[in-house]
Image 1 (spheres, helix red, strand yellow):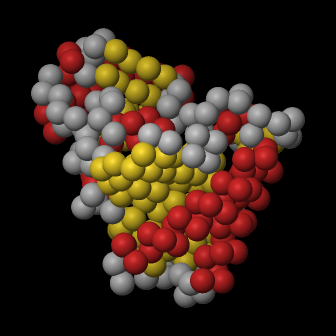
Image 2 (cartoon, rainbow, N blue to C red; image 1 turned 45 degrees about the vertical axis):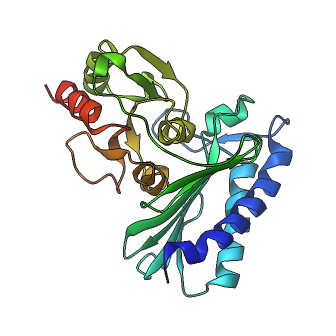
Length: 260
């Protein structure tokens, strides 16, 4: 099997999750805080219903596959093929009625992400990739995704969800990069990585990510010709502190500032 064999099935997962989520968006839904550390980590009925629907479809179609999801944990995580699900990445935007959120779906084989999708069911957009190529499908038509060249950090556009999510030391390091770029914008969550793959921004820098936040995005970014690593230039698969860039030159300059 190859990643492309699963493309139609990922479309099915996106469709069923989108049908589940859309009625909840911009509605009077209840919000639960699942943080145990005094912060605010919201979860909604939409998150849980969408993940449950995707898990049911996976188990019916590929009973030998494993599943790891944000809301319901791990089932057979040591299987050869494992699906990684984040039903609503950007729940804070979701509960505020803002469209900067999406459903993240990854298929891993022996722990390596071989196919990833970000589906935004409200705007009806899909960003997908398999590390060898990346694609966009939506109201603007279908097209190949290609990250843009950016040789100098002074010309770069930088995104992060919020510097307030970073600890003091990391926020100070991030600030060194932010002072060096042309423009910075906040609030993107998974959508920021996708517009990087589409060639609209140049850098995304974040911290405290979980594997389900990043694994679906790796094939999209790399398929579009970009690069994604940890702040210490390691593999991004386990999350943590992440740097994504469309150009290796601007990635290297950002890394020097983060670690200087």
